[in-house]
Length: 176
Image (tube, rainbow, N blue to C red):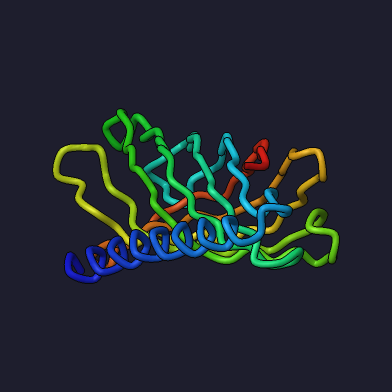
């Protein structure tokens, strides 16, 4: 599993470099369309799906490249903390997710209802926690003023063990 998560993390990094390079080249050739890139700041809260945890909270930054009005490539990184229940020893488990994916708007306006799927690597911040595969399907609604509200599941998988949370993401996006 370690080799697999390293490959996934490398793939996410390569995709980020590829998208950034292509968008910069495209933006240089199309100076009249500066809104093809966005940067969003989000707050995530949720209920863990594992009995060992009671609450999940986190924050993230999402760089989004609009391929057209309906399809985007988001690249997301942040920090998430899941609080362990007292009967499981208390404390918490933290991780840094690094994900890339696709975001599809159902409207041709580039806002409104959307579906999102992301995958990547989650780097544990606790001693000995290592790296996990992270995946996150979501549905949401993005307003044209930058406000974004989504419902998501974020799952972590490592060595046959799975955990995750069902939650909400409230965010605000800025056009670059």
